[in-house]
Length: 268
Image (cartoon, rainbow, N blue to C red; front, side):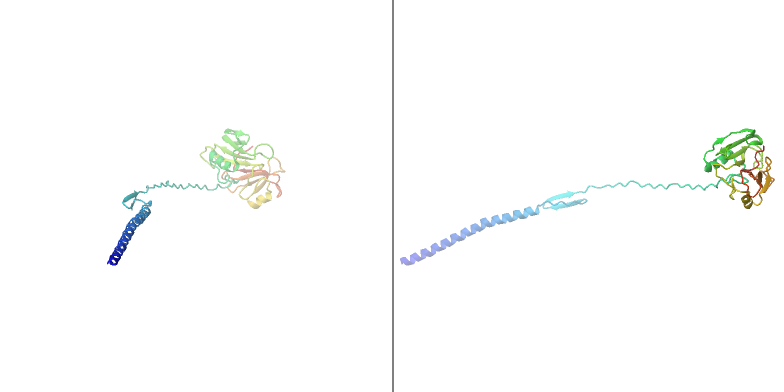
């Protein structure tokens, strides 16, 4: 009987121990399991609430319960106006060359105003070296048409006296300007440091043979001042005041031209 009671007590004690162990295990699971879960939740929260910046024009970003609105500032780019100016291009026709002709000096003919003729000559020769202004018709140029004459001059005459090239102006009536008034009516050319020629190439220093070759109508005469010297003339219309005329070292083919005079100008 006593052995039977002792067995029952042993079983009961074992059951009690087992229940105690079970209770302790449950409590341990609750305690330690709760900490892990809390830690897990904390880690998850930290990861979720990591700051994220989204920048866009008028963009709303929601993180958890917080709402962040990021507005990109409007950027205004001002492009300065482009002004394109087309340069005005002025095309000036080249002036005809200054050449010694029976009716003028290339681009300017006898009858032209002093201003026009002088400006034209200056385009090739530069400013004149001398301008006599209006002087009495009986002058250094000889006896010119009255009442007055004007000479505008360039360069130096190779003789050392006077100038290489002279434009002559008158106020008298001429075939170039029958009503009179100031106008170009002739020129003198003696060579020197001014380089001029006729359109055909005749110049001071050319031979009379070349002159007659270029201008078959050229006439050669004895000089009124010295029979050994010569004069020459090219005039295709004796009724007007246009002609080419000059002096030469003689009257033979190998004689040299010493001057070229355009127009009927002044006598001795």
